[in-house]
Image (cartoon, rainbow, N blue to C red; front, side, top):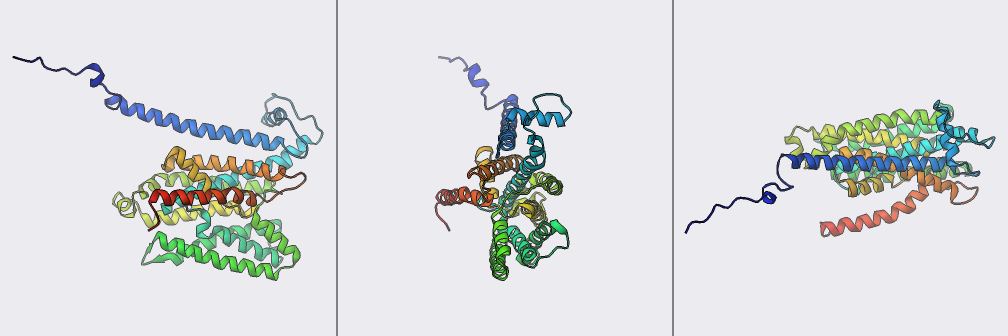
Length: 373
């Protein structure tokens, strides 16, 4: 008895996971997901900025905020603020503060994404390499000894240079035989941070009551007093840092395979680490120079974005920048409205949220890894 040849059914012959159109479909879906995530974060940032600009000691309707922006852009659309001081308050007080919060949040979050990529560890954040502690010590020196060589910019200039110098010191001390091991870099950063903390405590001891209060307030972080001249200094630094981060994204994805595998595909691992750490230092120092130390943004935001978007840095870096900007704008809004006629330190609020999150992340990482080696 002969049997008829079996022909594949149409359903089996063209499965969704095979064929020339399947790859294109997956790429289209991935692109749509990326555009959706970035679009959603961008929309959230715009809404947060409008609410932050509208909210204060006297309320300005969001429609009037939008109308003021459109009129400044040359478009005769929307209502102008009706309060006699609203226009001046918006453009000289609130908008500079909102823009500064967005810039600092984007800088710290993208710096955290780079740090976690360089170290291959979701628990890493910019403070590991001593940027924040170095900036704090430099600012404290200016405050205690009343230095004034750059006028009102003295603290910001010294904080920026102190953060860069500390980072380069950590990197140089961690190098051995032309290589920098990640563990050595982390331990060196911890040691330098400890010395910087001791130096900061000594400066607090030397300073008078006014100097101590200013140092404590600076180390807690605040957007209070942000004006357009400061924003104009921070903008180019943050833009350069973000562009450099995007250019490093592909190599960081290859570094995730391991140092040896990355070298085999042509990545100069040492050069990549040095450039990435310098970019982290520039971004973080630009963020803390005018606003003080703001903790946990570089830890929390990249990890949350990674849980949604995956580990690819070409998506992680811009999404972290948008997420960090949104987070800090909202945190600053909370800082100046939580208590009437008071401006809480924003670093205190980010630590209040970031501390429990870090503990949860620590427990989750340990459970996923099956315990610490």
